[in-house]
Length: 191
Image (cartoon, rainbow, N blue to C red; front, side):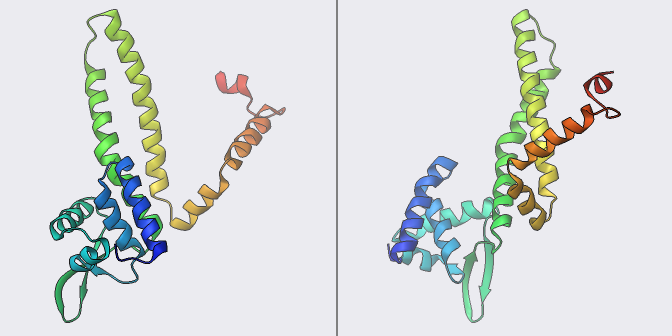
C-alpha cells in the first residue's frame, strides 16, 4: 500500500468493517481511498495506492457505482474516468441507508405482506402470522419514520440527532402535561 500511515490505518480498518457491512474487503478499501483522497482518482491511481489488481479495482468501482456511492468526474485533458465520493458525509450516509433499505428491508416487507394475506391452515400458522404481523407493523413504523427523517434538511437532521435521549425527556414532559387537570390524560385518551 502506498498511503500515508494515517490514511493506511483508515483504509485497512474500513476494509475490515466492509466485510461486516456486506461488502468485500477490497471494495471497502477502494471506497476508503476515494473518501480520503484530496482529488478524484482514476482506476490506475487506486491500483497504485492499494497495490491490488486493475480488475479488482474495476469490479470494486462497478459495485460502488451500483450502490450510488461514487461520483464520476472528468479531468480536463485526460480521457480516463475519475471517481470521487460525495463531499457531504450526510449524503453518503443517506445513500447507504437508502440502498440497504432497498436491498434488505423492502424485500422483507414484501414477503411479510404476502404471507399475511394467506389464510392460515392451522393454529401454528395463526400464531406465526400474529408474530409476523407484529414484525411487519414494527418495520412499517420504522420505515415511515425513516422516510420522514430522509426528507429533513441536513441541518434539521443534525439537530434531531443532537437531541439524543433528550427526546425521551420531551415525551415524558408531554405525558406530565396531559395528566394535569384539564389535560388529556390517559383516561381521556383511552375513551
